[in-house]
Length: 475
Image (cartoon, rainbow, N blue to C red; front, side, top):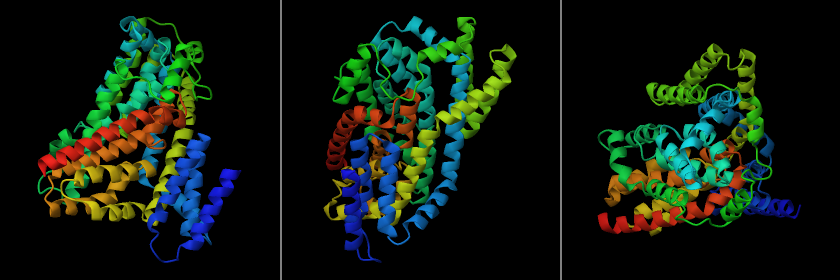
């Protein structure tokens, strides 16, 4: 109650302080700061986002914030990206639920247990699988966790560490591969905004060596998997709990292995593995075939899986439909978090947060420091908004002309932008890939965010120093 009254007093005070019709300036940072404070204090992600969004709406429309909330909510829910996200995540949840309901996920876990003999090998195999599923970070987050969480449970790996490895091989890896949804999106954005006279994809490929955060994050996750990086902060406590026999944290949204065992149909181990691998292969192959469209890929894979399991009588049609609906239901919390995150992004856009950040840092920008400042400022914005793609629709038209005017190498600038995007997606506790990684791994978003935060901050620090060095070397 003290926190609520304090935040309410701050928002009311700022509303009275701000002159209507003028720019918000530093006040535009307040909603995101409120989200951060509430999330850390309560460990509740959805509620923190809702409170921060409501605070921003009161700043925007003190006399009609309810009407503004209704308008923005309708705008967000009618957004094509949200509709795509609901369908993709819901169907992915249903697809994975079918694999679990039929017992094929456990069959794959039992098969991997024959190959993986140590705890370190279980972590390394998870990291390698995450790197191999590079087409899309959503696919990576849900598929890798579904395939490996039962195996890592057997070796006493905490679900928090699993979520960290899964998340670290999602967005940070996808940006490094030109055959991914990230590459397609950003290449088009760069070409549209005049970053190159030629192909946007060609510039994207030239920028891959300079996407430092992706490289640093991948290096860190393999050091953690090999045991060469110690457990830090909350991760140390999570690992101690897992070694004591409790890999799944209290309050986590996961039924555990016993529920899955109850659903297992005892078939040949090799057929069980095939029934897991074949749908996954169809999912990845179909997504690539349809020009990296994950929605078409998951629809194809779902239909294929239904037919495959019905032919073998692994489950009845009604059971598979129930599994799909159960999968949709399990994705409701992450989808709600992402949807409210989009509301917060819209509020921040109307407050002018991104423009304020760029304008505030402009006086300190030199050609040599431009890449580092771009990374730090855009990383803060993406972390605060959870919008790893939407922010750059606003920032790229500003950053690209600035870089051209200063004579900075465009691949280096693009590398800084993509590094900021992947850091924000990785570190933000309500970004889509972080929420899906936590959901797939069976932990709450804040449990995942707090345990991986020390590693993301180390990655951000190394990346910043790298861009400072490259700036002075190449500019």
